[in-house]
Image (tube, rainbow, N blue to C red; front, side, top):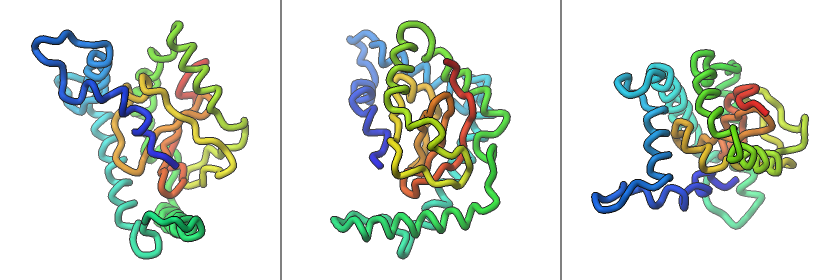
Length: 208
C-alpha cells in the first residue's frame, strides 16, 4: 500500500517554507493555517485542544507499539520477492493483532474526539467543492459490505484502498507512520498500512 502522504506532496510543497514577505498568501497557505489551528493541541488557539491532545497521545502510543513489534521476521524490508514481502507483512499483522487482542472500537477514536472529526470534515463536504470530493470518494470506494468495520480486522486485499482528497486530509490531525486515514462510504477508517489492519473507525463521519 502506498503511503497516503504521497498524495498530498504537490499540494503542500508550496507551503513548506511559508509565504515570503513579498508574496501574498495563497489558498493553500490559508487552508494549511486553518487546518493547523483546528487540529492544534494548544488550548489558546483551539477550543478542541484537549481532545486533540488525547487523540495524539493515543496514535503515538500505537505507533510506538508498532515500532516495537516490527522486528525480526516482522521487520519490513524492501525486497523483489513478493513471497518474502507477504510473509513479513503476515508476521507483522499477527504480532499486532496478538498485542491488541483486547482492542475495541473507540480506543483511539474516543467518544470525545468523534464529534470533533465530524466538525472538521463537514465544511469540506458542502457546496460545489463538496460534491467534487464526494464524487472522488465514491469512485474510489470499495464494494459495499466488503470492508469489515471491526478493530484489528484485516483490510481486504481484494478491495481498492480509497484515497483521501488533499483538501480533506489537511483538515485532519497529522498521523505518525504507519497510520493513515481512509474514507469508506460515510465512514472514516484509521489504518495501519504496514500491517493492513483496521486500527479504529468512526461510523457516519461524513454526511451525504
